[in-house]
Amino acid sequence: MTGRPADDEPILRIDNLHKRFGQTEVLRGVSFDVHAGEVLCVIGPSGSGKSTLLRCINFLEEPTAGTIYVDGEMMGHRVEGGRLVGLRATELAMQRVHIGMVFQSFNLFGHLTALQNVIEAPIMVKKEPRAEVEKLATALLDRVGLAHKAHCYPAQLSGGQQQRVAIARALAMRPKLMLFDEPTSALDPEIVGEVLQVIQALAIDGTTMIVVTHEMGFAREVSHRVIFMDEGVIVESGPPNDVLVNPSHVRTRQFLARITAPVTRAGAEGTT
Image (cartoon, rainbow, N blue to C red):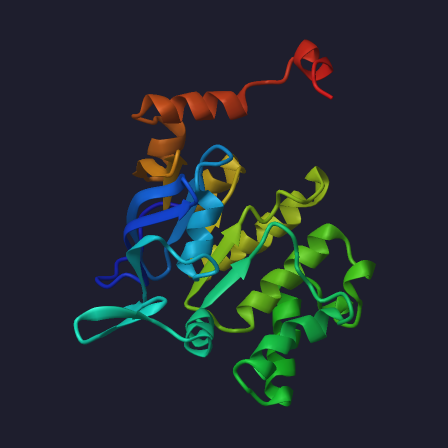
């Protein structure tokens, strides 16, 4: 995918974001914008801060410093008397309505069917009429290829099917921004493609997304922009062909060479 959708005001604006856990600084001054309809893929080694970044965007983790704006509204805080005041839990919950998140693990409610999982939040959080929500949920399950599994429980679904239900569940809130935290990392290799196809279809439809992924082919094909993170900072950012094919930073080249290097028989035998 080439070219970022033109839009003057970003859907997401992150300015000088820091996050510390004890003495460990996981994010160290991260700043970037995401515009409406843009697909941003975030890559990098384990421990580089990718998942923490996503969790800070929707305040599942409170940033240590920096500001995050979603559609012009500051996340987690408001300004009163010239100073920042933290939002109450109910206020923060209403902000999160605008941000859909799909995790590595599916986090479905095991005692609810696929359809019930999808309708739960719009009814309970947004107080929308059940009949309207069920109609939307049925359409979303069809969109992810699971209309025939609407009345199945998570234990009756494959990992790929559970993840597609999780995507439908996030979409049911009609978010302004979708966050995907390595959505295929818990899946068997043979079913990774079915989840990536759903995300690719969302990209074609113009859904604004940030996708943390280790699938480099997917990132190159679907994203408008790729960010490479390492040790809590953005090392390199640009169009996918620049970052993934012709990276300018030596650290990016090292990372890409390492994850695309063929596994030798000796190397395979040396792992347990």
